[in-house]
Image: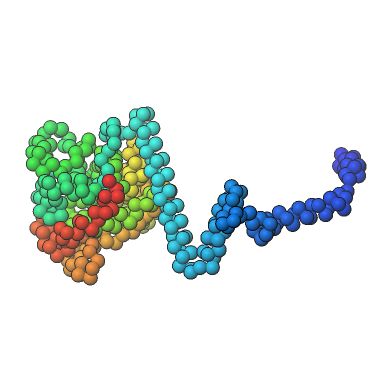
Length: 410
């Protein structure tokens, strides 16, 4: 308190020294403020630039004022114009921001990939030097050694063979491959059988991964890493080999999200966490999801889903530390849930088999993918795939509908 009382006289002395503003200074300050206000409001008639005999602005200052006037006029027209014009302007601005956000996200991921390569952080195939082939979408069909009949049923329906597969890739930007690893004894009979099949069809993507049903989370992680290292695509799709897909519709739907960053597309679900041993889809780590009876976080069902390039790159960079749950669709959802990701619930990716997908096709809503929920794929797919393709397929000509989007991606 003493210190406070001692300082008060000093403050009073300083206040006493301050000289009051003269009346003339007050008038000058007010006048200056008035003129500045008039200048900023654009109402100062003295600011009209001098013109020549032909009425044109004759100085650089006048050009700048003209540009300023044009901008004001543009804003005035927007204010007074049709509300639709304003909404279109807002929409274009929003799209530009989204496109810029996606570009920044892609650049950040590319830098992170290069940094990880230099530091030895990538756990799988490292991209070769030079530019990677461009694509709109890479479709990886998850398959197993015992599934040759399933693969043939797809080759007879929606997966092109030979030159058709190459043209689809080169002209439309759609890459389709059967994805498989190797057996526990590399070079054994199972691996040799795939070698023979691949020599004939040239439609495999071979992974450095040991095949096994309980290793699907690891296989998914390795697939995305290898795909990013092989193709520079906008989207990477994983689909099971007992699902019917219309490639044209799939590509067209994914093309809608090309300008958006970090997109995760699929039929989003939230199933129960099964803690009982011996049941299908048992979750050994059920306790991590809370009390008994809880449900998983929202994630795409495992039959088919797609992720954008930046998310695939994220998996590639961080795959050594990405946790794997028992079910691969839960694993992918877990990798996405902690990121700034747009979850797109696209029900066209999970139509039922006929009559459902057939009715939708007749109504003009062709499905991107069809399967039976009860079988987690098409029941007896080898026997039924051709009939489903006949009833629900988009037709060979449909591929041309997304040629413009594919060309833009290339």
